Length: 473
Ligand code: C2O
Ligand code: CU
Image (cartoon, rainbow, N blue to C red; front, top):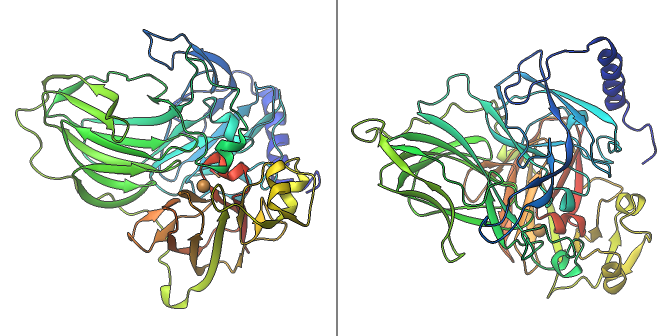
């Protein structure tokens, strides 16, 4: 792709610079954004306690404003968000608004929807949020490094009539790979082993950037918990102890309510909204399977009411998603291959990938040569972003997409600009978890024009070849 390919985005930037000169002192607020205010996002290094305080020191992180997570951005459904990215890192970055059915020019994908923003440069994101729900933002350039160092934050779009709860809390989970001293393990960045196996799995989880935080609650308090998995590659299996809960949304889109008895699985990139009553004398958020790791504690204080709320939560109002026309759906198939144990024998190197420094070769290469340039995975025989789209859709067309996982690993397939309906569960999702050897069928109404990425949200898999794109005319 040549310079100058993103006229709309560049115009936005110029317009901002023009404005900024005369707009000194304009309101730039973190937190709640309104129509006339902008959120300032300044990715930069910082120091923060991630590991257990008794045994480790602070880590050098990269965060928005130097903090992990970045500012929690809240706005109302239908409002516009203006966010000013000012790059305080030593490498280019962008901001992607994960799960927002956004104007394509604002999607934040380096080399596909915008130029990466160089150190010291600015970029203004300005877009409407059509759907209420729990979303998040993170870089889309070298995500495998920038997110592992702490660049992400929550984007909450409130319903016009939010459900009746006492408190609305975002819980962003991460899984860090830390050294004994509590620093971010840098030596393993780019590890071929991680890239060809399960990705960068961590050894220490945090919630909202804190090790095992304590979040005081009241007895019988009704909470809305917005859980998000910001880990590079770890699939989290979560459990709420001392609470009675219902899932009310997945990946931002209303679902259920369904009683949450037992565990809820969150793949990297996924979110789940839970409405929960504090029923026990102690409450915890547990990560199951990790010897029952206590991710957060909720010390239970004085009762908020004499007994828990009697009624289960009401369903959330649906977002304005177009209904798929299953009968008229066009079928397309994505064959997912490669990775350890079922190594690629050969694949074509994606032309876009090759053009952006990820590899130098092109044409069909053998597996050994691909691995030497960090490519271990392929979609439909292409490792990395192909020059031509996976499919081109007419606006409004329904597609039935079969994702066939022929690898020996699970994957979390993320669609940009759209939500898809998972055949197996009927849920609307923007990120679909597939077990090894599994095929997932989804229905998608291609109603958002532009070039959109489809990739594995296990970020080492994405960087190692699991990336493609589709075009909506
Ligand atoms: Cu959350 Cu393409 O990413
Ligand atoms: Cu994957």
